[in-house]
Amino acid sequence: AQSVTQLGSHVSVSEGALVLLRCNYSSSVPPYLFWYVQYPNQGLQLLLKYTSAATLVKGINGFEAEFKKSETSFHLTKPSAHMSDAAEYFCAVSDRGGGFKTIFGAGTRLFVKA
Amino acid sequence: EAQVTQNPRYLITVTGKKLTVTCSQNMNHEYMSWYRQDPGLGLRQIYYSMNVEVTDKGDVPEGYKVSRKEKRNFPLILESPSPNQTSLYFCASSLAETDIGGYTFGSGTRLTVV
Image 1: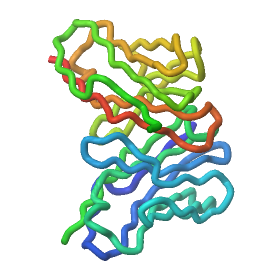
Image 2: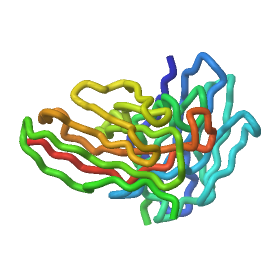
Image 3: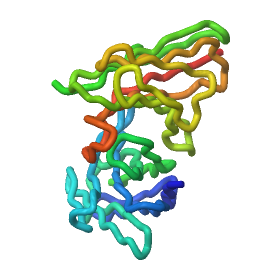
């Protein structure tokens, strides 16, 4: 069975500081991994995805994530936080791609201080 | 514009009164899914559909029904809503079951059952 654990339900950073949101997964097969972002009163938007091509994945808005099989991790980073990055972020895992039986983490809310 | 459209955005209803939340996508996607989002639990899959007339249960299907008579539409039916179904609901679609592109989400339906 697959599962996703996001460490920290809330993360607070100062504007300009590094953003690090942690995600660990469990999967019995090579996983597909995703990060989604949810802005207030909106649906989720795909931020980036890992599909076994490159282990370092670049997404929209300057975010990137690195797949580390040995650590079963897929942490999301951004070198310099912007106020507009304040949102909730969800890590997700699937064994067949973007749809079927995608399992989501509980989410991490990112706060950005001026 | 490619999108998933859910209606209504907000709904307050009373226990036991049947309701339907509609979902429509204009991307000719085969795979569609319903999720509910609750604080601290992330998104949990209710039902999914791999194509017309093909549906199956997700992780939390009790109290819900779905149908897929047309490719573009995937309504969620609550025959006898109860207060524990108060939640934020999302419809999502992807090109196919094995598509690695990730989901496109609707804007959500906030349901309150009193």
